[in-house]
Length: 462
Image 1: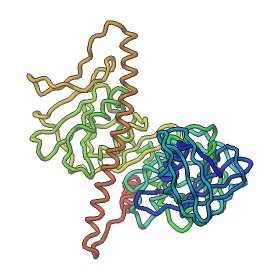
Image 2 (image 1 turned 90 degrees about the vertical axis):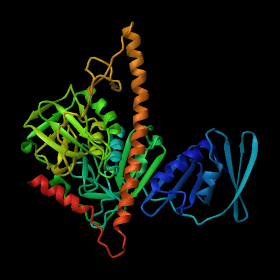
Image 3 (image 1 turned 180 degrees about the horizontal axis):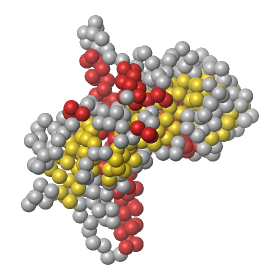
């Protein structure tokens, strides 16, 4: 008999689903149980990924293979035990739910063998590596056919992790990999999973066919893509010497802008364009088809260095740069790629055509970011003017105000993270719908996402 907690069944179901991309309607591989003196190893092996969990608990030597459905049936949030026993050609699962005994029977499925571990694995800063992997995965494209843009690149010579979807690219270096060449592995959504956020150091290694990551009880295998081609993204990164203008965002304006970008109007849900004016002030304009005049957000604490510039951009890319902590954005021109860089990271994205830029309008609804000394609140409308301002309430205790501000910041960050996840889901759904439209009729030509990557390269070289 093998016993695991119901809470572990839930954690396994979540991590297994994210690693292998298991959806409610997709076929899932069998879940394998290997029990012995060292505890129970639970693992699942897919075509492009595999994941294993080492559960330290006393158990007799036994091997079971059960349908993935078992985890969904018996999972829970409490530490109540689930026992698995073999009875003939079935696996019988028993547990209690709110004190009521439950039982479920499953057919025994085919067994898989655990994947081998590399001979050498190198430790890396876990938080930095997981963050880089997560950001690289979020910059991939599952629709591309010419290049494998659904993969991320791990280069061993100088340790960078990179991802691109043809319109944006992300690179972060400073890691240590026990190989010299490049490894392309599928974009795996597991790297944002809370279960991987604890467990000490994160080790990485490679066999002939798999890149392997191990942290605490978790081991993740990602199949190496050997046949596909990856674009020359290093050529897409603009040289600092070509920078003509730089947007320097203050910390307060960065937070204010992230909230404003989600609320100002848009007439194009696919690109969500905004115009950024770097002239006497830093202003962001947006307009919907139903709006007679644009909305203009003025960032009072930010500034421009270099030449005056007006450019048109996808607001999601600009917001993402701010979310990742970048405060300086470099531009070589109104249609050249925008570039953010710090000590180890680079984020680049293609700008939209300057022909769609929104010009200044004296009738624009104007919103100003609050002064840096005040707490950033949502702007309130003044009926006597089309100008907006932020208001900072008086406080009687500085300590109480700081405590309240810290609590509000934490709550706001959680809400913003949820809103960004929903916005990303909307963007991907809209992009998929547009892609499906372009595929009809069947004889129509579907533009490759890689064309944008090549355009990005041409712009960077211009």
